[in-house]
Image 1 (cartoon, rainbow, N blue to C red):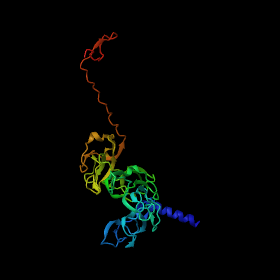
Image 2 (tube, rainbow, N blue to C red):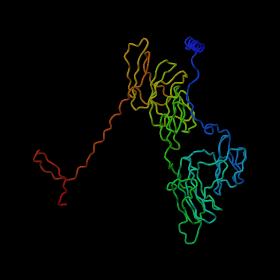
Image 3 (cartoon, helix red, strand yellow):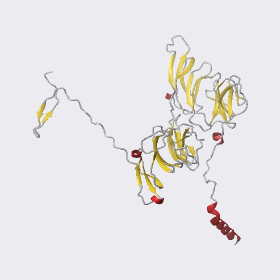
Amino acid sequence: HLTDYTIQYFKQIKKKYGDNWKRRTELRSFDNIEASRVVIANEKLYVNREEGFIGTGLRKDEYVCDCSDIDDIIVIRRDGHYLVTKVQEKAFVGKDILYAGVFNRNDTRTIYNVVYRDGKNGYNMVKRCALTGLTRDKEYTLTKGTPDSRILYLSVNPEGEAEVIRVTLNPKPRLRNLIFEFDFSTLAIKGRSSIGNVLTRHAIHKIVMKEKGASTLGGTHIWFDEEVGRLNTEERGHYLGEFFNGDKIVVYTRSGYCHTTSYDLSNHFEDDLIRIEKYTPSKVLSAVYYDAGQKYYYLKRFPAEAGEKPSRFIDENEASYVVLLMDAPLPRIEVRFGGKDKFRPPLVVNVADFIGVKSIKAKGKRLTTHKVDEITELEPLPPPPTTAPEQSYPASEKTDSVDNPATGIQMSLGFDDASK
């Protein structure tokens, strides 16, 4: 019976000392993390386009972007060939480099818009594609593969943007229209091995971007998983909304700080998070917080304006904390009293009537001077009904009128004067 005795012994230790020695570690689920998405970008990538070298050690050459030492780099050359290779201090990838950048595997939202010439004197083709499923250090081609093919225009679009380009042709007898425009949004996105469509059979002098375009893919749907504290696109947790390029997420903490951030899936968030949502500056928030210095509860309303740098929306005392944070247009709260004021009936507060909208730095208004036991959020008030404005009809200049035999009231028939 040694096993049973040992179990009972540890149960007695827990019963006797457990309340005085609380768990300090936190139990939390772990998510699958891709190292290349969360590692710090502690290196700088450089390129020598003419000689065909890329790497982190080419400090005298052209700077491309920040990267980490475990990233993959995609390189596209003028002849249409491209490859993916690991970041190195210096690597030869082929002369006449057109584009180099960090490559994210399984990224289907980055779309490459391409115009290329097929062979030395062939047709000029146009295509849109995503580059996925690539093997490291293996060469691929964006063209048909005809010798002497050449990329004439290339844009890399993280959100599938489709721009408008202006194409100038070489002068040629009987060729009237030397300049025309092409909108990439009229072209379907296909696989990386697709040939593309014919843009023109005439020789091209130059191509320039006329107008930047919007995303043709729609937004990215983002969820927040409360268990692991991370963003995802796999529909786990709380749905935050559809995000387009430039949209932000805003975060509010129990300690009274707020800030905006991108919707990058590698983002980390504070442990005392109380609200996370898509950033809408026009939204008005209502906050109930405890002022540790005054030792009273305060209520405030403020616009949801925040920046990338964390800012405080309650008083500066670090011991103060947020009790409630509401975004309903007409919220209500209930204050229950305790201690010597326990005999008092609960206080119901219509927030919009209690205090107006102030700046985010405003202190707010004290809720009560009595001892508070609990503050809870109630069902918000419904928004006031919107009444349509009465329609007014212009009176005609001249009308004929007759008597209604049923009512004896004159009726205006509105006939035009036949004599006119």
